[in-house]
Amino acid sequence: MNTEKIAIDTEFIRLDALLKLGGAVDTGGRAKFAIQNGEVKVNGEVCTMRGKKMHDGDKAEFQSVTYEVCRG
Image 1 (cartoon, rainbow, N blue to C red):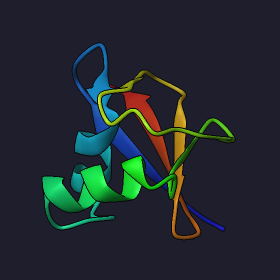
Image 2: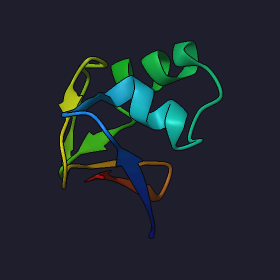
Image 3: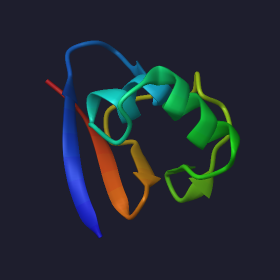
Image 4: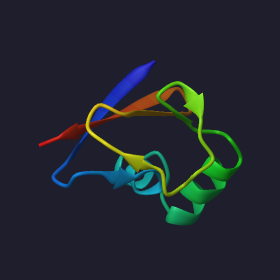
């Protein structure tokens, strides 16, 4: 499984914004659809909350890619 580190300069990033920033989806609407349909895991568990706050060290998995949040 590929891992991509996503650097943020804020305290957190919302899950839907993380997927968009990481290039997993091209629109916020696609992110919302994928999350609400249970296609995304956060720290190993399915997450259906698109507004889930992702902090430094959190990981989201979507379509065999892991997106890891890194502060800094």
